[in-house]
Length: 136
Image 1 (tube, one colour):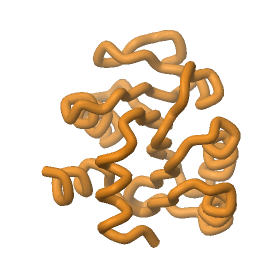
Image 2 (cartoon, helix red, strand yellow; image 1 turned 90 degrees about the vertical axis):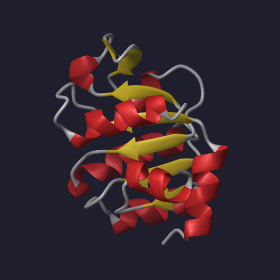
Image 3 (cartoon, one colour; image 1 turned 120 degrees about the vertical axis):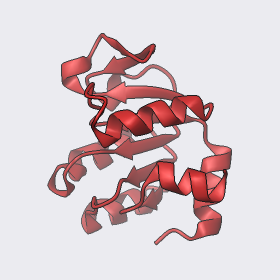
Image 4 (cartoon, one colour; image 1 turned 30 degrees about the vertical axis):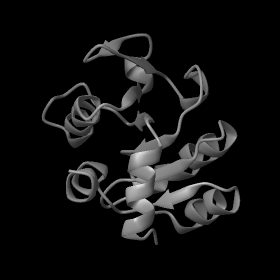
């Protein structure tokens, strides 16, 4: 489990975030957090096959992590726990720095695999809440 110090370091150090499972519906948490991260100064892209080739809030969306040009620091996951393994595999493949699983999302085997591959893993935590609490 990531410590407050580790979470704070992640949020201060890494600036490019891919939101996996981004919804175009403004009432969905993924949409609100996507917007918050943009306003907080992060370089954010969306990952959702249904939005591929489109923009949301002026930011590009892609079908999968492997389609995103350039490096991704944080892979922020808004998917059900059972859907984490392929996302974790993609995060490893693109050499992301952090696999962040949102509130209610955990997958022990994928978390271990990502950690073993050198990623920082933060699970069952809200990136927005942690940013507000630890960064301000």
